[in-house]
Structures are given as structure tokens and as C-alpha cells.
Length: 472
Image (cartoon, rainbow, N blue to C red; front, side, top):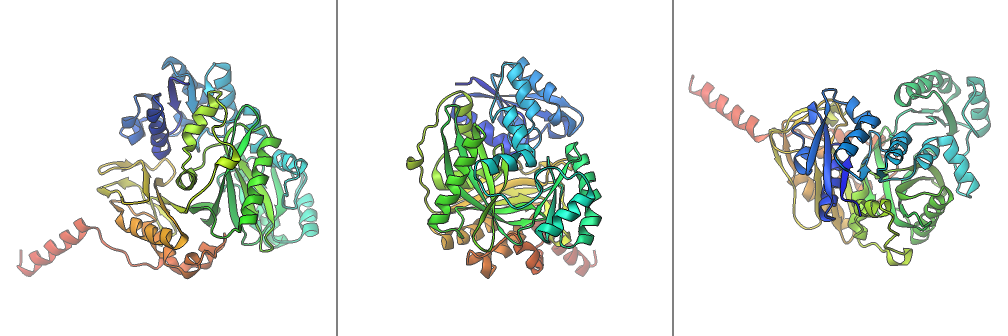
């Protein structure tokens, strides 16, 4: 087993990995930029080393990060998610320097990160894919001809994209003409490569993903599915495990497809196979995420499997601890991504100092957070500052527990998505377990909630009113 692991990330996921290391008796090493000098992951790790003053570049410098790992005496590196987590070069540099990369090989990351190669691999393995281009589009004329053949709407996607970026829906040929160059530009800027492809748009599907674990012996299992349909502009907001919308037969089918996909590409470690489920109950492969997912917490809640610890065990060369028949789930879990954003102002990021923070608690409640009272959320990173996970035995009770836990959280100093999620919990379609990826766009009224002033502002307003009344 490893003795010391460098956590090549920041925020709540870095804290999560540090905690897993602590439970396994493994020393943890944090890295940070000047903007993160007072971050929680720096405080929690056994050791911490500076990446320099640039708030972003340091977390993206693979060679520098591996140099720190080597100098600190680390024998493994965990990339978390985001940043370099799906960068094949980081995995390959680790291999060359004799440091175990806690994830799949660089070759598999590169293959599954290329959407065209991934589609080819899945088609060869008999995994259903949405109709689309066989390779990268060579020209706008080719895109137009293909779209006419498969029918609108279609999706233009960056071949090397991820995280919901580099994607444009085209409902008409005019949309395609207008968006083609835009997607190429987005792909070039975000991913460094201009390649794009086209596929049929599945209108308002349900977004279902399956968590898998695979070891170096060739064995693979799934930990059931997550429903990620509550999303905005291809960015997930709320995730649920298992999906309240699947039958037992569908659950078994999609789980088997995910394991088949993992074995087809020689996958190792934790990963996620993502599918779209159309209105005719047909599953289509969308992509494979070759890393830990933000929403892994809800799978842990229903199965009892610590996915991060399993990642570490697998990377150390140990076989899977579970056969598929030994893995079961119990109840339902919901994860809420607590973003420092203002839903009433088109979800504009809201960075600044946390003047007061109270964490929720009680039965079936878990909070993964990178914030504390007095912490200043920097403007350089993703707006997610915490994740709330709730669990209960049935769907109705988990929704009610979610409402209670959201009400328990108190975050002052910045605006968050908490009140918006409270509105979603009260929506009849969500409560009935009947929703798809069009839910947010179809319900714009959910942002019409009343804004509650924080206690310090109420106190200040009362004091001002008293002073005015007394003529002070």
C-alpha cells in the first residue's frame, strides 16, 4: 500500500481525498497557489507545498506537480476531478517518474477523451451510440449533408470536450451554419484542438450515468446508476442515486452495458459511463469520464462503498474487493451542488468572504465543503463551494430530508443556489420523480423565490430605523 499521496487538486475534492488517506493510514500532500494559501485542503493535509502566485497555471503544470510529488517522497498521485484529472500526459509523466497515478492509464484517458475514438470503441463493443459522424467533420458542407440525412435537431460537439463545454444544439440548418465556426473556436480555446463532430440530438432525454470500478486483473463491476437530468446548460446541478425513473430491468441492462464498455477498453480504476435515455426507453452511449465524479457521494451513500479508497487500493495493484453479486444498494440519495452563484441574476458567480457558515446535520446528511466562516471564495475557480448529500430509505423521505437539510445550511456573505434547490424540491414533477434534462429550462419561474436578508443586515436595518426614529 502507498505511504504518501500527493493530491493534485484543490477545494472540497482535495479535502475528500485527504480524509480517505487519513482513514487508510496514508500521509497526504496538498498543493496550493497564493489564492489558496488559507484553503481548507491546505489546513487538512499532512504537508502542503506552494505552486506559486498564478492562481490557475500552477494547478495545470503537470511537470511541476510531479516534481513536487517526487521531492516530497510521494509514491502516488490522485488527480481528483477537473484540472489535470483527464490529462493523459500527467498519467504518463507519473509513470515515467515511478509514481502511481490513481486513475486509468494515459492511453485509455486519451482514447476515451477523444469522442470519436470513444464512439468507435463503443460501437465495436456493441454499445448503442447516437447516430452521427463516423469521424471528425472535415467541413461545414459535410456537416450540413449529414444533418439533412439524420434529421434535426443535431448537436455539434468538440471531439476533445468535456464538462458541458464545446457543445451547441442546432435546431435548423441556419443554426448549424451559424454555430459551426463558433464550436470550432470554443474547442480550440478550451481544449487546444479544433476537431468537432456531429450527432443526432436526443430531445429532452434523461441523463443516466453508471459508476464502475475495474482492477488490473481484468475484473470490473458497476455500483448502479445516477440520474443527472437536473442540469442547466449541460452543467449538472442535482444528482440522484439510483434513478427514480428506471425499472429493475432497465437498471440491470444499463449496468451490464457499463461493465461491458469498461472491459472493452481495458479500463482500470474508477470511471463513469454516461448514457442518454430517450422517450422510447432506448439507451445511447454519450461519453466515458475517466476519473472520479463530483457526484460519487450519492453512490457511496446507497452502496456503502468508499469509492476514493477503492481507487487507491486498485492503483496499488490490489484486486477488487467485491464481486457484482456482493454489491447492493439501499434507499435513495440526492446530491446538491452548492454553487456560489445568484440564480436570480442568471446564475452570475458570487465570490467573496463567507461572513457566516453553518453546516447541516442530522440523520442521513453529509456535507463535503471547502468553506468556513471567514473564508474568501476566490474568483479564479469553479463556483461550486460545497456539496450536500442526503440519504433516506425511500424517494418521498429523501426529498423531505433534502428540504430540511437545505433549510439547515446557512451561508452568508455570498449568494448561493440553495434557495433555488428548495424551489425544485417543492416542484410536483420533481417530487413525482418525473423529469428530464429540459426541466430547468421548462421552469424559469423557479428563480422567483423571495430573498431573505441575512441576520446582520436585518439587525443593521433595525438599528438604522431606531436611530432615524429617535432623530440620531
